[in-house]
Image (tube, rainbow, N blue to C red; front, side, top):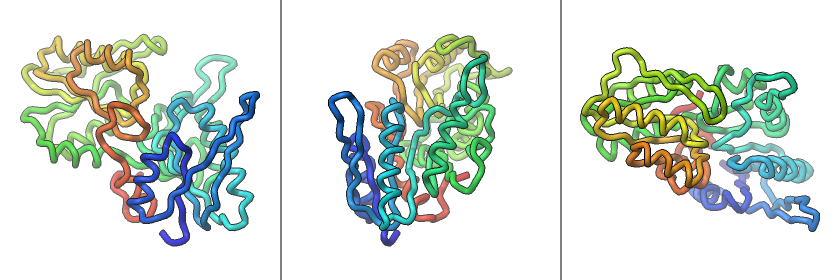
Length: 302
């Protein structure tokens, strides 16, 4: 892209600068000044006519505010004519209805906040439930939604797919991801049914006829925060005779205690994309994002 520049905050520097290098465009870092009372003030560098901001939203609250303030600063620059957001992980999408009286629909709030400020928003495997796509949350040609499954499939195929592999999803929402990856790998796929009674209370039910005895299993999901669902699923698969259990997650939000819980449940290896910085990162998204940014036909876009 000509006359373009990629910016990022310090915590995203490593992944964003690698993406900028892949794109052959300049990279700049957005500074963040903190006042004694805790308020923040971003300071943006000199930018380009097309300016892209890279921001992933694990621990999202301050990051969202910092982004909105940085966007205001960039919008005031007469040399910036187009602003785009590269957000591999978008937060606040799970609350797509008001589940209880007095609650907000945070998905609508988040999508409106961002869509009204950027010309294009590129994201990967958004965590959607009842909403068909982000265009339903906020209409318009703003969203470019990518799937990580082809990137994962290429990496797994290069490693060598073990004979008899079964790709398992923990719930019906994971079905498109699971089926897409399994099709690319040429292996079997199945999804469990999940009923949630609270943030950490879930009930899992296997599909009829599921047979994993003596077979390797790969659990696939778009997001993992507490590890509870993954641990229960792994325990159920082990009890059903699975030879081995591994897990791949697009967005790794879990902490060390959750990681230990999943390993104790029998998950031998847990890997994630680098949509956010995490010790489980194993699959870079720079290639997928770069294809989308330069408007090539991006694998996995919707």
